[in-house]
Image (cartoon, rainbow, N blue to C red; front, side):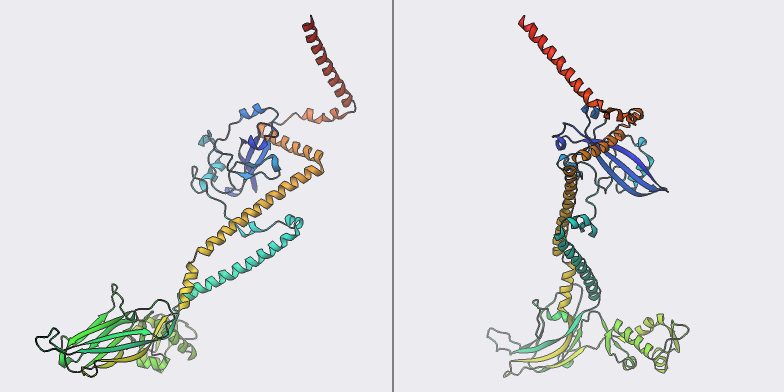
Length: 511
């Protein structure tokens, strides 16, 4: 069974907001906690204002010093009579009351504070989290202002737009997890320059030499940033004529390392005055890595060189199309004669495929280019061009990443959301004040009576006074017809008394 308990009440003075009525006012704060057994299911703070006829009554209650008039929440329904009242927000940890010992606190109140972030002495949290429902105009306001339907239509359109954008963001996040590449042409330029030796006595190199240059660029590259030539390769080996340069000096190697700096080309310079045959071995840097399949498995799957994921997918399609999966034990594969030749077993588990496949994967074949370094004086510079296919990142991937990481638009949207929430709150407050004033203007007497009754009940709760039932039962006695005559006689007697006092004073002065 749900039960309700008033954990504490207190008051704060709010002099500035009620100056037209009196110099002081008393604002009561009631804190309700509804719990089911030991589980708290609802917390509510209720404020009410009381203007006592005797201001000294305020001195009998301790002033809450921790609440400043600058922060609080609006007191709905009081119009210009009451502005904003200081008090805690509905969310956040509530501090202990000054002068209240911890041992005197209600156990439920103490448990509530301990469950909240920061414990008993924890700081208040920030503004409560906004929700989509906080932006919806209540039906009573829509009935009052028919033009507000345009705002509700925009709100529905915004909800659909947010759902579409969220779905697209999820699709983009899934898309960028996969490699998004496109094939492009990389043109490799291989050129050599011959520098003949000079006779003795002249200022130049005496020994003839040649210089080999290997460069390249992407054809029709739309990207603004030019990619370095070495970034396309994992390694480069230039093999010169072993008979001319010996077994120790005929290889020129470059291998990518973690600290490698990218370059636009490679240069090799050697002495020599005869034509030299050279072989270039270029190993592409595939991302993700690619592997060459065993020739037997490659013919069976129709895949020569691919990534490990693509090879596994092709293998599964072959198993599925040829119905090699066991009908009863789904984790087993019944090998056909081709699989038995390749994997060497009549039956195998799905979990064993990666281990068996590892021995059938090899590094891709390098790109082999044969070139002759010419030292013919009549042909001092000669260039050879070769086009190879390379995979580069799709420019769309960079745009996707930029879209997901961009926070500029989100900050602007958050600022607009805060403005909308504040505007809706202001509209609700103005509607409450309008209803308050409208009720007062239509039925002022009934309104004042109802309001005084409400404040009277609040005063009784505040002062812990139950009243005098006998006096309240006989209040109709003062509504009898003779009351008006009695009031007139009373006022007349008071006027006569004051007149006599005045004449007496004047008579003393005359004598």
